[in-house]
Image (cartoon, rainbow, N blue to C red; front, side, top):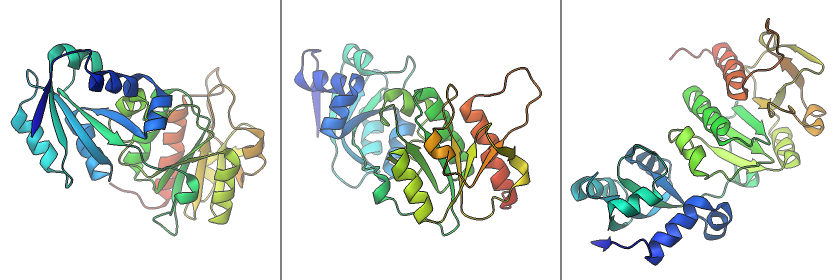
Length: 269
């Protein structure tokens, strides 16, 4: 069954706009918004709970939205909204005419069970820019990492910019968050080698063995890794560079390090 919403002053529209704009509302309600068929499908495949779908019939048909809803086991409420409402709620300039309200997952590091006895993990410490987080998640998806751990996160994981820049890879990765101490304790408990991308006391990244349980840690472009992480690494690693500057984009650096580890592990396609 579908319902129609025609007014910008409708309470549901106001609530959706709050979910879109305010991290504190997303945290309080444990809900967030996804935009686009591909992203919604990936969220369903990733085990997220979809509660409602809102669609603009001038962009997408009721039949298409119904088929999308049918890929999900639980009953989803469908709401038809006007172009004016959709333009207010949509985050992208070009989009597919459908929005979903989704239940957030508990990403507490203490709830994480690694899927492999020989994991390859990416750790991002204190990432702040949604674009960088999205790019890291795309790289992690491409490499099929066992987990992405975010230590001391500075940005809400369900920020619309992270969902957009990750092109849905927020939903294809196993993600856990916690304090820097929590993440370090988890890695040590799981007996995972910690290799930190840092200038201090580092060796060339391609001289080490990543075939055993491995976590590759990257910090921020501005300040790098915290002293606490630097004090707890198995070994710091560096990517030699021939240019004037001594750093590169964090997602690019992570990609180089991750795919060296994948190469050593026999990654082919």
